[in-house]
Image (cartoon, rainbow, N blue to C red; front, side, top):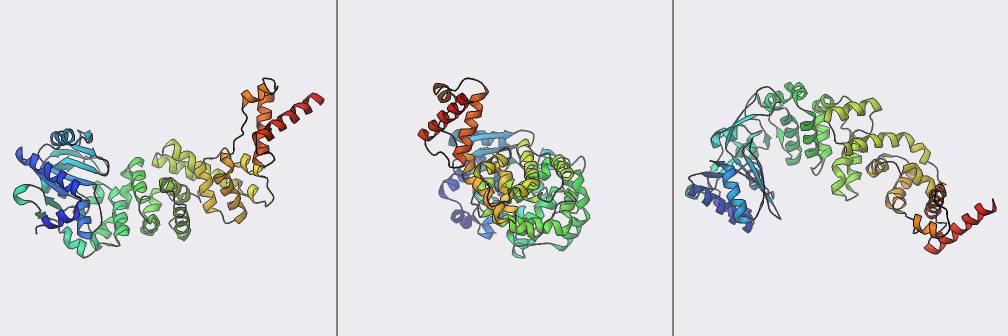
Length: 416
């Protein structure tokens, strides 16, 4: 099957010209270049995907260096795996030497050696990601599909390539579900049996790699679908017995998306995912996933703030009271609780903090107070606090109003 016409129609002109230039450079060096993996899959499905993967039967690192110099791309190389990433303004391009993988033990990172395209394809996770298209001039556009990936696409199936696939790399369990839910496919029956058999193999996977797979799920359009499926399969409980993928999660994830702050979503999803955890459970989870200090604090703060929400469930609270209750918490933790709470009053107070109160600043600073006659020492801090509190509560609104309050406080102290 030849896909030359489809490639010409699918890729933007700039990207198409770059790919052709790469293949011509490779051919001059008697090397072959192939378009592989997700872009081939998505081209058949009609989905845009312009972050390309190229496999080189030859020396991908040397070729990538030449391409980067000629096209002024930013280049990042990984010599251990024979891979290179070229970054352009509107897309990225990954190049890899065709390689064979061996696993010293289940869950370990593979040992890679240069090899052929066929060896490179069989090391991949699923048949739909194990297709390639030749970019070499003499057979440009030829589909290489040794594992019937196109047939599985047509039958809407996620299928592994060999029975030990999940044993070698149990992160493929999470990826199988991610692709299944993203594409609306089903996991092929034998693959489903092997997936359930090998769920215990997740214990062989480092926390960093499991966290990375969850982060990829959280970048999906509707991650709650994958979370629910992982829960039903018993995968979530293998990561943590406390994780749930129920209707509550689906509702709260949907509310998070309505904020229209996509850069916050992955961390916000994590905070909502652990909302039912106890203090011991969250510490075990953070240790298991080896989370960053920033994410760890956001999740811990989410649970700590949750226990303090009754203090915010009072209609007549002053803005300053709300502010001083919340100022020490990570804003993401405040946002997670605003999404999770069932109390309209608490929600209103949390949103007031997020949208207004945390941005309130006084016009006067310590230098201004000294010029107004406030002595250097603890008095300056006390006056700044009083000014900030008054501004939060709307008692002063202008710089002149702040100065008037400072003089009033100063006169009060002198009177005392």
